Length: 244
Ligand code: KG4
Image (cartoon, rainbow, N blue to C red):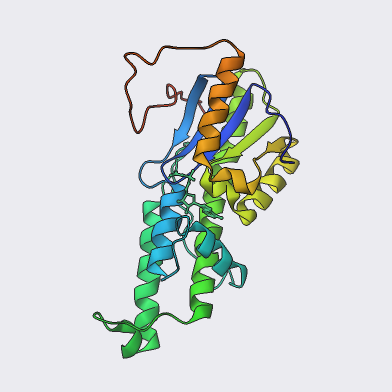
């Protein structure tokens, strides 16, 4: 799956430490933002929840949280799927993060004084950490699935050129459970999933170099004079895909 070519137009789901966006990609440099996060990016939520659970933060907290979730029961502490009442294509992860914090506080109280000590609390039992990690991941991915399905429906109804691929990208795209779920969603929708090799998902140097190669091959060269460096340049204009 990792060697497939992405063909325009496609729907990109960008999930990284700084971004959580759905983009309609019509060509190199022609991106429309279908939805974005109104608070935390998905990677940021993984990092913050990992920290709350006392997990190590190598390459952010995502990899450790994913590993913990493997032995967890995702139904043990059901956490609300974000923004179910909002009929748009935007994301939000701050509320889910707060739900995890509330669940941890409650569990610590139930576990007893050692665990609830405000100065030097005992680390949560390993199984509790795993169950919370799995529950967080479940709601986080469900949110992505809901938004993706909605965007696909709206693209179809919009009269725009149909897409045949979803491209999953950004650091969180290294997550195996997410890859599996996106693969299943694409299969159901009759679409192809294009996703980089996990090792390359967190390699920002490769991403930038590749973007440069694509542009150079088209002869898109610009002088570095007068270029400004910005940390978060908007990728494209926001478009509203109406529901009918
Ligand atoms: O795209 P990226 O490498 O860089 C920035 O956005 O800066 O994304 C980094 C993010 C971090 O939040 C990290 O926790 C997350 O990607 N990440 C993961 C996994 N690997 C990296 N999240 C979940 N599961 C993973 N396996």
